[in-house]
Image (cartoon, rainbow, N blue to C red; front, side, top):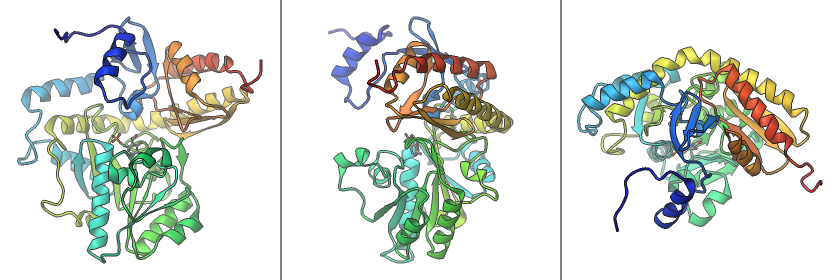
Length: 410
Ligand SMILES: Cc1ncc(COP(=O)(O)O)c(C=O)c1O
């Protein structure tokens, strides 16, 4: 049988091939994406789609950003990868830059968010073990999402992701978000770390209260445990701040934070950023990665972080204006329970499942996502313009008008 390497134009043919050759973990929408420019994606037939999910928060500078393309082209011709056996020009400056913007001190580079979470858990284990063999527990939040490897799943507080793979890591206690009493009861001398997302993303765009986060900081200090913030979805500019924990005044500083998604604009790169105290728990040979922190990915990340500061005010302003428009729109649709979020991390909670809304939006040329069954999640590129926001509102209005509510009404 001859194998064609050229593009297969239509979604149905691709679906048939994937059904035969892929492990069936993804349920895709019938869209074949061919190229992207700015906030727009184009399918095989040339139809364009306004991309408000941006690779689930990865394409923060949109698609084909000219400065990112320039450094990719230049660096690919010089050096893509050389392993962590040697130095290259970009890992050290990237670590320094992430330390500067986070208020922390040291980095380790991974290839994904999940891997960064894994590394952070290893830091927590080693940190605890150096103090006492019994100090290995992790306190995490219900409804959280931290990834799908064994460690990351073990601290993910959603049974639907965990059940098929249990038993997972021992010693994880879950507490409800913002329940200070439950947190106080769960944390003790046996706790090695408290882990939380400042804004639960996959869990439906739910922020933690600043008071809850401050109490987590106090309890971690009181019991010599680490405070770890997972900023993989809400960090690196998404909320209009470098890190979501900087939204609090004064900021609540973690001992460790983990980032990934937008860091290298679509190339796989994640980072653990730690203070000296936490970083000391990992010594030579205790952790590593073949690909992590490669030259190309690090150079792109440096370019991203060079572009980011000038975008932060716009992320804040455009995000606020977007939420105002959505809230205004929501007044006309009784099935919209709440519009919430920070910066360009927006959730629209519905009184019904969001799946068909996502499908209808796709047909109208708008890419959005539904999480937690009933929360429409928007993670637009940071470069989104006011006319593009208006366009999104127009399409969403049209799609929402088609919704039958109550669902059994004629
Ligand atoms: C908060 C959070 N943590 C961890 C992860 C896992 O990251 P990755 O998919 O890059 O492994 C995600 C992915 O959505 C996330 O949103």
